[in-house]
Structure formats: C-alpha cells, structure tokens
Amino acid sequence: MNVTFKHCGEHLASSRYRAIIPTAELAKLGIGPGSEWVVMGKHNWNWDEQTAGYSKKCFDVCDDNFDHPQWGEHYHLCCLKADLVTCNSAEMQRIIHERTGKDAIAIPDPYEQPEKPPRVHDKLLWFGHRTNLRDLAPWVGKLKNLEVVSNFEGTTPWSPQEMDRAFDRAGLVVIPTGKSMAKSANRAIESLRRGLFPVCGYLPSYGDLGVYVGDIGDGVKWALSHQDEVISRIKRAQAYIRGEYSPKRIGALWKAALFD
Image (spheres, rainbow, N blue to C red):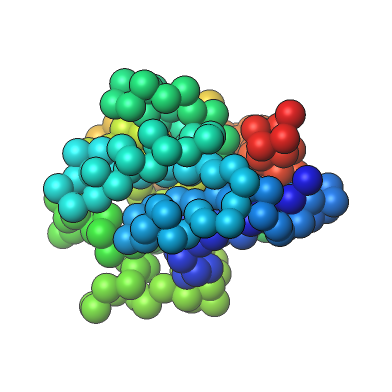
C-alpha cells in the first residue's frame, strides 16, 4: 500500500490539512509515497501530466469552484476522471454529487495547533488568505480592536511564527462567512485549540462545535458579556476536537477511503 499526496506548499492551509498532515499520519501506519495512488487537489495543473504513472487517482475537493469561470471546468473534469473523489465536508459531498453525479467521501480537516487554556477578552483576531478578506470587509470599521493576519499589504503578514503571536494576543476570533457553505470548520477548530472562542457566520460544518453563529457584532457583545459561558464552551469543544478532529483519526479515515 502506498500513496503520493501532491500539494501546493505548506504556506497554504489546504496543503497542510489535506496533504502534509495525512501523509505524516499514513506514514505512522506504514503507508508511504509510491505509485499505487496519487491524491490531487486544487487547480492550475493538468490532469494527464500530474497523474501519469499512478495506478489510481483521487481528486480531493476543498473549495466549491464548480461555477468558477476559470476553474469550473477543471473541477468537473477531475471529478469525472478520478477513481475516487474526497472532500472536506458533508455539504461539499452533497454539492459534488449534485454537480457531477459522483459519490465523494467526506474526510474532515484535522486540527494542527497545540491546545492552550481558554481565555476571553476584547482583542479580536481575523486570519485567512487574502481571497477571503472580502468576507471580512463589511465588518472592518465596525469591530474595534481588530487584528487582521493575512498575505495582504497593510495587514499583519502571515507566517507560522506571526500566527502564533497573533493567537497569543487575541481574546476572541471573528470568522464571517462567505458565499460558500461547503467550507470546513478548520479556522474555528484551530481557534478553539488555541483557547479562543470563534464568533462565526453560519456554516453547516460548525454544527458540532458549540461556537456562536449569527451576526458578528452581536456575537462579540454576547461573548464579552457571557465570559463564563464562553470558557465552558471552549473547554467542551476542545474535548470533542481532541478525538473527532485528531490527525490520527483523520489519517485512519484516509487509509479507509484509499485502501479498504
């Protein structure tokens, strides 16, 4: 049994969650790289070139780009050509079947960060890729004491070290939701692992975490005025995440999807 995960570099969260961490966990199970399976994700690559020489091909979907004017055709084509389609959430699984007729296997993103003690105060944090800054835009100017970490000029520049410092400075995380309902809960999960409570827009994948879902401004006010409840919710979520989203469990799910 062997599998090669190809990815776009550790600077992308999707590469870490969907390729680098699964590769490390499968190695612990005795499954290393090779030509039996290849797992591909994202876009800007050619199917025939990148999958040549591999016996079986898996296409992993973590973004709903089926209607994207530039990448939509790529996502349709890869789903249809793949021997196996995987994805990051139940909602993405539903969308893939609706758009392509393929039955995908949903494998959550694992947690990545060390667990830290819960706390809450009024220093707010948003973090993410610059393409997601549009989700935050309606709240810039409305939220006080907000730090933004991203790969965009004028924000705190993203790096693993700077992300660590930003988490340590923060007392709450805000995660407005964009148009896609198929995203995973990885940013909320990482925030909870760091001891921070996420105030979120609606996303189906948040359903099991006990986070605040609704208006971001109202959520910040609620969290700051219910700090004991917030601390309790963080502790419950951390206990749940330790098992449900552990890298070990996610590695086992990849093994089952590819080889069972």
